[in-house]
Image (cartoon, rainbow, N blue to C red):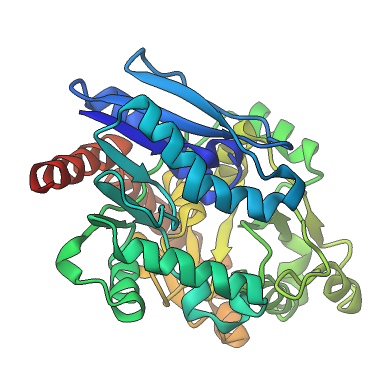
Length: 387
């Protein structure tokens, strides 16, 4: 089979969809010896640097120049998804098209598989305030309904897809994300110290790593930390890691004014973007990893922290309990007292932290990219056989 893959998100390697595609391709290369893959890549006017995995010659990258640059990046992206992708796929003579994020062509020229990581714009009203966002959500919802198969990354996402899009459950395969082998407990004290120094992090710290849109709940993390007893705050710094961007947008509240308001400037550090090679040491050195997100289709930072042996506090909502199982502490993400109390209890109990870290590490081994690749190929084969 000759499988075409929309490779747009290889231009966005820091995103969850970019990480997913990168590692899925690595897994497919390691597992699937039968099929050939064509990576269909748009050549935008302002194309971002592409991060390609090191793949065998069964994978071929094909660039397609877009033709709507003058109308802006959003129009250019839609043109790619609805026209350019099909043009490239037609020229390459593919047998099946995989769209590894929530967007598929309206015109169905090939058997099509769509991966839907989440349906956030459809279940959280604040994510569809703009008319253009609502129109785009309606378009991709309609095109996904016409796909031959859907891949959801969690049971929770599948339930939301069934409820919101009305797609039959038997058309949806649940194939979770996985963690790269490069995430494991780092014990090299020199390396841990070097990473702390690079980001101005204290020896003992509580870590949040992720995005800054409102559902990530960063403001509640800060207020919950502020409510800890003063001796604990003096002992443990709060590290907020990740790239601050789109500040001023209604969905991306700037958390730094709250830190100044609470007079915690010397106890809370904003690292900015973290280098890929620094992520595992940063997770490994954390006393706690705190991620009380309000909604996740999966929650990759939680799995990465677990793979590094960090004790995890996360939300009991959406897909996060599926990822954590019994290997982390689940809290009500809307309750700052609950987050504060759980942080305080774990900071005071090194034995329980050690147990949670060990269970987290063991559970993370259940999530492998080879397994993801194997299950994905099974979906391809099922769709092709039914076509």
